[in-house]
Amino acid sequence: MTPSSTSRASHSPNDDIDGARGDLFDPQCPTRRLLDRIGTKWTSMAVKVLAEASPEEVRFAELQRRMAGISQKMLSVTLQGLARDGLVGRRVEATVPPRVYYRLTPLGLTLEEPLAALREWAEEHMAEVDRAHRRSREDAASSD
Amino acid sequence: MTPSSTSRASHSPNDDIDGARGDLFDPQCPTRRLLDRIGTKWTSMAVKVLAEASPEEVRFAELQRRMAGISQKMLSVTLQGLARDGLVGRRVEATVPPRVYYRLTPLGLTLEEPLAALREWAEEHMAEVDRAHRRSREDAASSD
DNA sequence: CTGGATCCGTAACGATACTG
DNA sequence: CAGTATCGTTACGGATCCAG
Image (cartoon, rainbow over all chains, first blue to last red; front, top):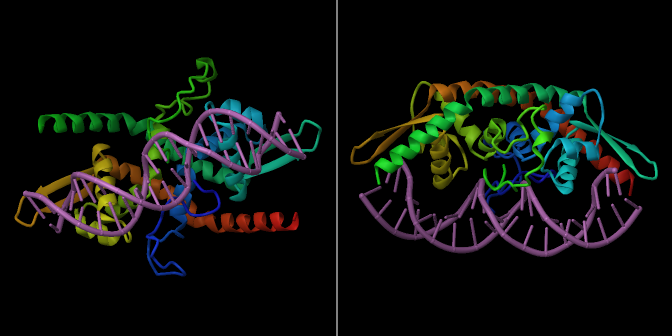
């Protein structure tokens, strides 16, 4: 997701959005913006990893190790986005091999709570979602 | 969300780095799948609208009205996804002008709870996120 | 070691037109 | 009314190279 603006295409190009249209669900909706943020592939994982380490700091390379599969670019982009949001703090040791430490801010820690609730829901109910998927496929097959 | 729920690069890291820290790093991780789902542009909005109407049913056109800006295609895609997940139920009146009613399933209603928690966090803290954004821009400007 | 810059594939998203 | 089909746009996410 674009860290600095609204997500993907959010409007018709011709749509005039120069101000509040009074829409209940416009792109400025806080919930929309939050979901855009945590909906990105690595953001919620980063928050979780940093929350688990909290209040300890974690270095860039260590974060990459703990977030298996993430590329340097995406880790960088993700952390920058979180830092701009004020959810993650960044501390640089200006040594010759630079060391950069990250940790959740108090604000980031508060986000961990509803995020944990989502994880809990997922672990509790995704099996049922899988069963629903199977039923859907059976229905589709029977109507072939 | 991810470009695809299955397009994740099969980086195939050593299995031993997972496990002890939980399954959030697994491509099959339920949390990953849930975030992919609710991270889509209209899903969480649809859940909210249907939850607000619950236990009343809502028709397709009415849903479109309440979700300002959504196209027929995206509403259809969103509802189909939710239906496949077992979060939304669909009832068809096979009249000459067909009428289709949607409503949250009990499973969908349970999802509304953590989703509402997220919304609450957003409305409570996104202003602070905005302030962090402004600070970031000031920092960037001062370092020019 | 950290992470910026760039190319690119892929898929979410949107608009429009069409069907029963 | 309630979708489906098709097409074009956008931009996320991955790989690679480069820089401090």
